[in-house]
Amino acid sequence: MRTAIAVVLLVDLLAQLVGKLVVGHPIRFTEALVQSVSVGALLVLFPLLGRVAPERWRAWVLITGLMLNLTIAAMIAFGQDMSFRGALLIPACVLLIYLTVRLDLGTLIWLGGAHSVLTFAAWLCTLAQPRPQETSFLFTLIVLANACGYFESRRLQRERRMVFVQNQTLTRYATIDDLTGLANRRHFYEIADAQLQRQQRGRRAQLEPREIAVMLVDLDRFKEINDTLGHHTGDVLLQQIAQRLRSALPEALAVARLGGDEFAALLVGRAGDDWASGHAQRFLASLDAPFELEGLTLHMHASVGIAVRRQDEDRQALLRQADIAMYRSKSRGGGIDVYSPLDVAHTREQVELASELSRALKNDEIVLHYQPKTDLRSGHTHGVEALVRWQHPVHGLLSPARFLPVAERHGLMRMLTLRVLALAMQQAREWLQAGRPLRIAVNIAPESLLDARFPELVLELLERSGVPASALQLEITENTILVDPDRMLQVITRLGEAGFKFALDDYGTGYSSLSYLRLMPLDELKIDRSFVSSLGGETSNAVIVRSTIQMARELGLHVVAEGVEDQATWQRLWHFGCDTAQGYYLSRPVPAAELEAWIDARAGMRPGDAVERALASTLRA
Image (cartoon, rainbow, N blue to C red; front, side, top):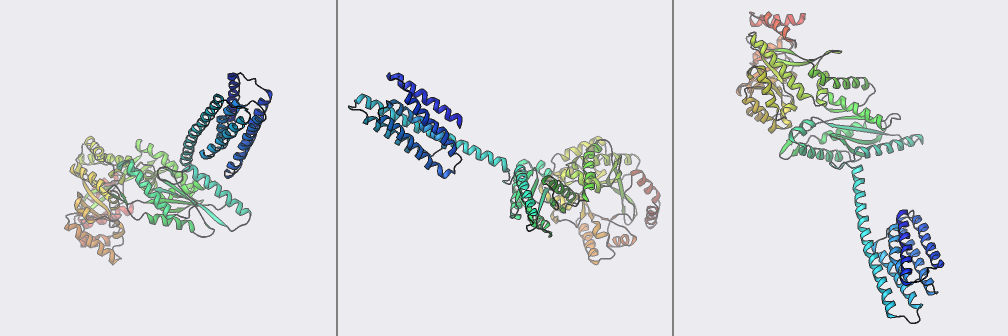
């Protein structure tokens, strides 16, 4: 601003000097003094007006501009030879006023025109006999000066409008997430800091106690959907999630997208109530309705972590606590978790495991244990299920519950699935060479079935291993199909054409349509352990199991009952006509060498004796 005023002052002085030299008039000290005083007044007055409310600018400018015009006209009327000075001052004054006060164009035209009329009238009054040449010259000069001022002001207004729009755009980008329209991370931090400070002042003033909570939301399996369906589909899904989050939390102080598929909300409620979980439940309920994305129907789930400010935690502490709670929620399969100080130690261990799991996949620390699948009538073990374990160098043998949630959270399930398949194929080759034709069942993660490249990767492993596809069986769950049925059916069909057979695992716990049982290349149906383990005591479970077995037989499917843990369950399944049993009644998952010994110990026994001997050996172990 001050630089612009200085430039205008310099141009004005040069214009006066050039005008005097052109007509041969002497440069008087009085003229230079008056000009310096008038422009100096502008230098002092207009920057001060920048601090005045915008609605008062126009009045101040009109008053000061009129005073300047009257001063110039009075000096000309009292004999000061400033005719050329007055004309040449017009564009300078217009430009100066616009730069310092940023008036609208109408006010600039009015002010410039008034200046010109007063200057021209005052000059005419000083002439005894106006000559047409001088009058025409000054009039033309005034018109040109006003025209220059007008077009210059128009240009400056356009520039100012462009700068204003750019500033508005930059302000929006600085506070708003351009994809979802929610607040971005930076703006969320600013709002959270301001609200926490306000709450702190309220506590000191002993006002009504209110609590502030931070809620973090992380979408389950979003990375797989984004990678397989494309980033455009992922962006559309994020936009729809943002709409539901905003609709479910209208009273939130701020709702933001922190990055990727992670969202946050700043909530406030009355102290002492379980109010924060109620907000989170409302959001999760909004996810029950499926998402329609370019002809696809997707069902999404989320993990929510909540941290309520109890003491004087700052924003960083609350976000860290909410992240810990959200991680615990994800490890349990989703839902809501509220932070507790007891979570810290567990979370630290999970973070360490996450950093070590990638290394474990490359260092042969992933091992397989096998649980036998035994024919209910003959007692013959014809197959096994491969169950993954992690032989950790420090923590020892880790069960899947310890590290599978870590793999899901950090996008390692595809690598882990391929590693398990490679180990299963290697073991199948060893058993085939040893004369043990056991078919190995491997659980396939949903992330892999969403990957169009997965069949080719599996076939490459199969070719390197040298075993037929019939040596393995791929197990999928009901809920896996619901993520993207069409894409998964394409992957499953491609693997089925290569010779793989599929088993539908945990049947009865999901929402799959019976039509998928007909469309997929299934040859086995596995009844979930939740129905089998309590088969002896609940009539309703017995009806479900018996009807499932009958339906599967009508469809030509082999039936496996999981969770067989006692002889009564074994006998009842045999009575229902079930084909195969799997569970602790036979054997826990064991390494390959122990499974071979278990099978050899049962060789040559009658079916009933085989089961009893197997049970006895399991109990002794």
